[in-house]
Image 1 (cartoon, rainbow, N blue to C red):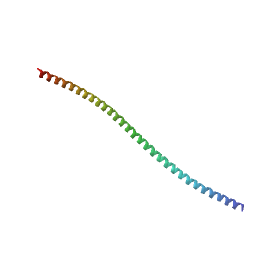
Image 2: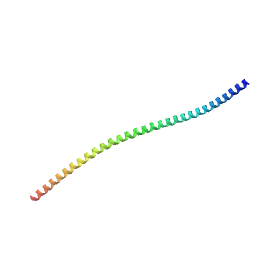
Image 3: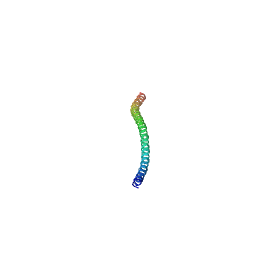
Image 4: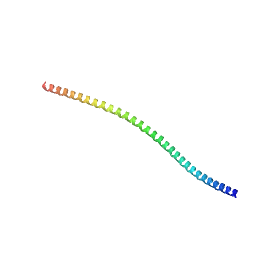
Length: 108
């Protein structure tokens, strides 16, 4: 009777441990799948981050180039405005001189 009781206790314990083992295996697989999914999504995020960093660097370089072009264009516009003002001033001086010459010819 003792042997049957011990065998049945060991049998019950064996069933319990095998059942627990299956539960733990199932939990391990589930955790491993979730971890793999998280690693995969992290890898995708890393790829996206690198892609966006590259796009950002390209955009910053474009902005820098456009800023240089704008600065050069502003400088050229300033020079042309100054030149235009100088030409207007010279034109006014020449016009006054022409008027003086007409009036001196009219006096003669």
